[in-house]
Image (cartoon, each protein chain N blue to C red):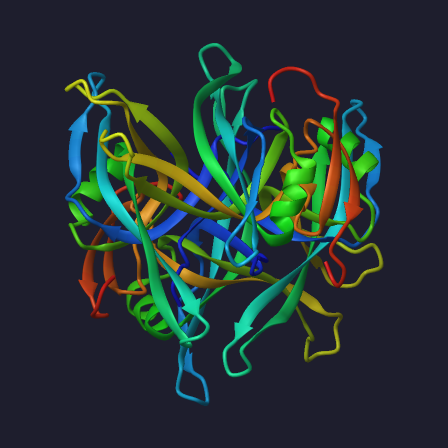
Length: 127
Length: 127
Length: 127
Length: 127
């Protein structure tokens, strides 16, 4: 058996709105930017301090794309688990290649550490 | 550097209500049962099938305990990430020790694969 | 898209020898017990302390079963990533059901935090 | 409680040698490049196919740096678990910023799916 890519779980904040579209085949797809900030314990000062912030693009498909569009606003605290990919892309303006860290979300939701949610089921069948 | 226990991310369904209390020191704590069902691709039949279901007890503390109590109902689809512990416990009725799989949640939320959420922030400061 | 069970990564110590066999169909399978101990920072005392130890059964198949048998001894530090399952089983002696936490390993190796390894490739093709 | 950054586990191949140095304070540090290739099931063709390859820089400290230097060669199959960071860096030649995905390894080893290892303990005390 072989690992299917790099599984990752991120806890952070949506720092863009959700952008939604459909593929040529009609499949819903959405994405947004997520910022995840490290926290570590500063032993000399005896306090938790914030470390570096990393930025990711989170992609969602089908019902998850539709529900993310409806539910997630810029600034909301979220957690997401999925497959990560480091993608290189060509710039259209002739500058050197860029690199982006992307997550294909398998599950995604508001983080209840920061607030409460009212849930409304949209997908039938077993959860 | 050393790994601090077993980090795990689960996607499943709450199969109990959230039970809430406070410690003697006044710290909010809550727990509920979570069922996570495997899905795997059955190659001969060319379909996704459900595999075994595993059960976990999810523990939350402080604001996460309070917000979980308010937000999560029995049957809701959730995702949770945290530290896992396999705990042995003595039964009061003289039967042999039991074993339970427990998750201390670091982040927790409704899974948007199954529905939408309306979020209400309760914790101030940067997310 | 749906999460295929609970993915977990464990860092710990093999606390049994590797037991190896083959299925009726001739597929190699091996398992061993793994102990994973939490470490957390004790703020008042300013030191890292060890917390609870959890025990898991790690299962490996095919080449991973064969190579684990050859490579891993009782007491070796290992890391493993795979799918976790909480399994209930009937005892043969009439006592109540037991519960075991099992990992189906996707990758597995000696942890270089604790020592060095000499690697010998047995599987051809791209890694 | 808060998540300390993005925990990730990668299974892949070392695609550079291990570079080793010490900090000004005398702390050993090492890094190497790791390539992780997705595998997914192609349903129409009924075969597993390889998907995109992502590249990461893996960092190790102290005994893990020393033992990685001794143990890991370019081309070796490895698994690593640790904290991920997406780091932006300035180029010295005036070109736009680059972005790199870095893993600070907490545990690291040869993947026994691909071969066998002989382990030699270098760190005393309980594992």
